[in-house]
Length: 214
Image 1 (cartoon, rainbow, N blue to C red):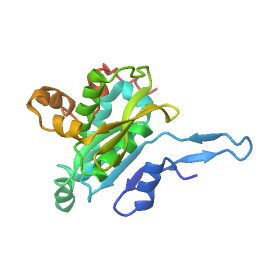
Image 2: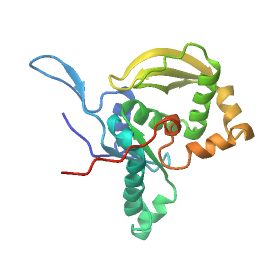
Image 3: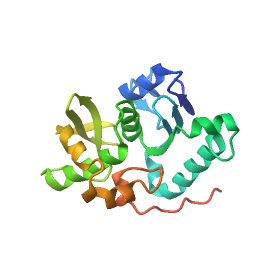
Image 4: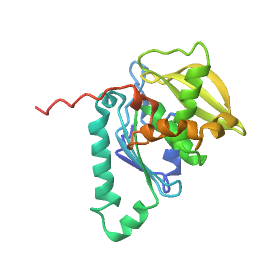
């Protein structure tokens, strides 16, 4: 089983596909036949889709503020102020993002592939939370965009620890269009996009400091 620290989505289309299908870093033990998946700690680059992302393990979300600072520093060194001129030119084409766990990582890649704005996808989720009854709200359960079919956006409540879908439903593209750039959503959009961690959980999780290394 290969463990990846970086993925170039432009060169390794196969690995991007493995992210979307959920097979990257998945393994089945030959002795006990138990399937498991190693959490991501991956820098993902797709110049074609304008995305640079640091994907971190789900548990790291507890201290997302410091993780966000680390992601921004890594980007600046590779494609920003600390990089050679040629790399800076590439950096100007990229949006910097930070994700936690496989469902969020997959979702960001999917959003980039379909040319959507992730801030507007998050606003759409807030609209769903306001208006859709019986959402399975629980610790570790996340609302994610999992597929697109024309004007229909397939959404899922997912157990982010086991990557198991708990509730699948469809949202209309018109809902995305309504919140995308809408004045009524401008304040929330600004809060969600205040850093590279663009996720509705940014609004609800108070970041804890990392424990000092021993």
